[in-house]
Amino acid sequence: MHLEVSPEVLLSQLGYTKSESSLKQAETMIKQTKDFEKFSKHVISLNDNLKKMNAYVGLSNSSEYLKIKCDENDADEILEEFHNEVKHWAEKYNVNVQKLDKKEVYYILGTKE
Image (cartoon, rainbow, N blue to C red; front, side, top):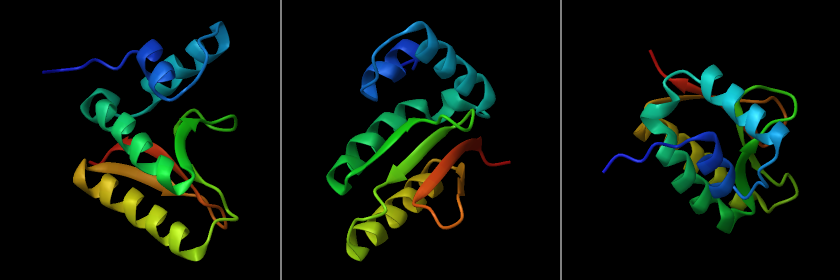
């Protein structure tokens, strides 16, 4: 079964309220992210897995990519689990992620070459 993740579906699954600006932001992110449709449904499952770590996948206010973020104040064990989960997810689905320096944030850039 193939599930197409439209901007509306993505916003709903990530817990956003649908508004004109959030829909536009989601559309831009989908266009900007290389081969988003190849791994889009797995973004939703990643978000579900991250919730137990006080982390989430969301729209970024400073980038046109989706971000993966964990609370910087979490215990070291939770932060380590968060980083391991993101790395495992990215490798499993052949997705290129970029970690921000000195922050518990990654950007989902798209599929690897």
